[in-house]
Length: 355
Image (cartoon, rainbow, N blue to C red):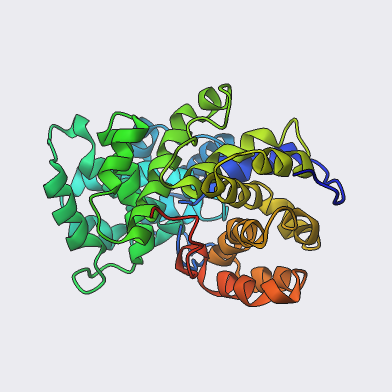
């Protein structure tokens, strides 16, 4: 199938990089969060807070080293650190190590969840899970134990924290990937222990995000959308893979690459990644979605909308609804649902989940 629609310009490199490295959220991220800066803790020394702020700003594209987190945990405290990183709405990557530090000190999941709550798009919460299940902490976790603990912490009826189940399962996915020593197939096997296909998908988004954080650029050098070919959860994988094509290809060229994929499930997943890769550009120019999400079949259109509007809806639902006014009438209802609830809570596209 060849494309005849208008060529889409390449996204701005810097904005694309900021989004694809940190925001994901995540792919990883599944609920509407409060992105306005919170009041800086009055107990902390303002000079130390400013020094920490400067470190965060200098490492905007990278994780803050654990030794730095430990130092400022003692100097300014957890609340002040979270306040500082939340001054930038794209703070997800910085929250992981803060959550790890919280669990290292408390050694208690319930207390750690209470401390982190839903701060910084639940990334602090994700860090707690990452530390709890990391094999380096000397604890061996079996699959049955992981399933049991997951039910206890991700089930709304059992849990006292405010993190929604989808985001909780995303955090479990991070743990699954490093429990599998970053082997994709083994990580997907871990995610498959959950009975619900949506839970499996949410777990997969966290697993693929975890791999992308450490092996993304290396994976991107390989051909055929590695490691997404033959994935049971193609959208979860392509959401972190397609972004690496934007530097050398237009949106139209990427869409053609998606259409050239022989497997329909992977094709749809690729369009999900296409929408995700252009998220910031669509936020800046909402009309872009009219042409970007107009390639292939309607299933491809909706997946592209889910990847872009569904993700925007997690953090800026009003903006996402505005973008929906630019999609065709027969796709508006689906778009609006994605904008209001976030893509992980939309009626699932049958090609995005395992059969």
